Image 1 (cartoon, rainbow over the protein chains, first blue to last red):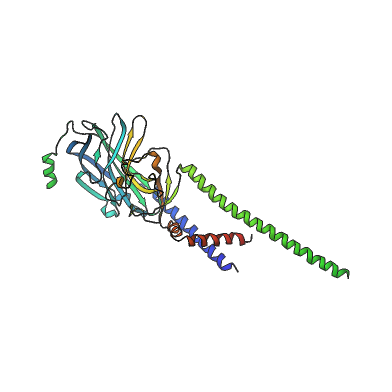
Image 2 (cartoon, chains in turn purple, brown):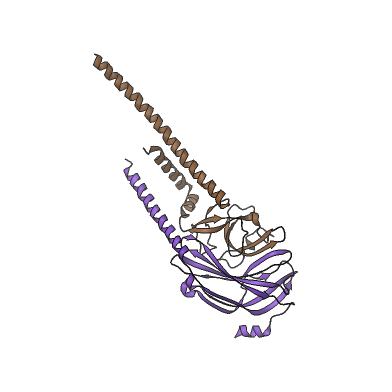
Length: 181
Length: 187
């Protein structure tokens, strides 16, 4: 009487076990994959450093290159690439914020050259006070590999030795011109 | 005469035996069902313990993280001891709302020396940040809002729970069938 149900049950159990094992093998294969993506960040300048409503707002412009074609595997659904600025003040020992981010869905789109990379809405570099003048900062580029199935992995590369302008300033005309070209 | 009598006795005894075994078997099946339920509960609770997250497995309910996560995908969470950093995908709960949200942290300020953390989030598929989702006047998320960070991903499987939530009859039917299975299975 139950044989039909039992067979269906056995078939379902077997199928889901096979699927689970395949998923695990898939994500394990990802862990073996080693990549060495080329990422380069230089400071191109500043579009300004303002004081707005009692907080500092910086407009950093970076010369950014990233070649993430290496990181794509057969289990990669998309790579979430983002650039962060971090600095430390006396009241907040850790401040880190995204400046720009992009979803990369295809390997062919994973070569990115942005000689004038600016903060894109809603990303903005703001402080909780007015500490940004002459403040040293780091730039971290990170890429979050989001899989078709399995574990998410994030790798990062940090570039140090940058500094915000010593005084509040308006946009640099030279840089603006460069932007228009 | 003697033969008939012993035959009657035999019949009586067998009937009693059958009744006894049936009772015992029924009891066994009930105990089995209880075991299944309690071990499921134990696995869930130990997952909570090991991941440090109050809900270690969640189902995506919205499209705000597309094309990374779709509605009906399953996410595995882990909290750990490290503070949240920008770029990590976190699950958070807004006070007074029962459905948690899965979005990415994009900005973090950590206070000296208390270590109190201010987090701003954004959905990968959303144009703006999440301040419009927070309560009125709330600018930041803090540690207590966060339920965990996403470490693993399994597509489609959560669709089952979405269907069961939308059509409760399906849920009851499924539980009934499974219960029947356990109670009637002979081992």
